[in-house]
Amino acid sequence: MPDQEVLEQLRGGLVVSCQADLGSPLRDPLVISRLALAAERGGAVGLRIQGFDDLRAVKAVTALPLIGLTKTVRDDTEVYITPTTAEAVELAVLGADIVALDATGRPRPEPLEQMVEAIHQAGALVMADISTLAEAQAAAELGADIVSTTLSGYTPYSPEPTTPDWALMQALAAAGLPYVAEGRINTPADAAQALRHGATFVVVGTAITRPDVVTRWFAEALRA
Image (cartoon, rainbow, N blue to C red; front, top):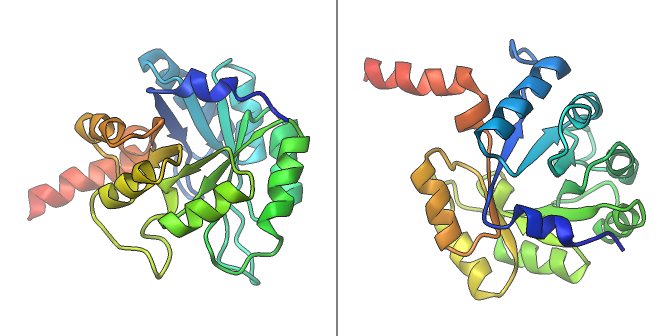
């Protein structure tokens, strides 16, 4: 089994998600690695990185714990965060300390239990991205090391809040499940509140590493 110590390294801290979508001017592994270094300089205790090339680039410049994932669009499923065992194992081989995957209840190409076992055998921990308490409980029963609120609002049966899903966080804490707060955490106050709600650590992406989106927030506010 992989070493659980990495979760203690991340406890109480900020993990920065350094990602850029196709078409973004930041969509380059070198740029992503520079975003990662800037996040480390600012006090991030870990990084969430999408894709093999970006993971390699970031692994080469930092010793911070890395959460790795892929985003793969498939015709046979709506699951796109690390949908297959092969992708998950490759992330672990490339140096991801934790592999994040979609653990929602939607139909998936491969059994979640199979993926969890393979990731552990490859030496990494499993972060189960979920949208409901029931999904979190199911993932934990299958051996996921920690769950994350990442996909709240991205499934048809979860709420569509414009704020962090505080209710889900409270439910996870009440159920005694170790969890990560991620999704619509757009201010330092949000991040601090997530810790007070019982999060093990907090992941922030857009508000830190997507200047095009943040610029749009300001521009739209001025036009209102």
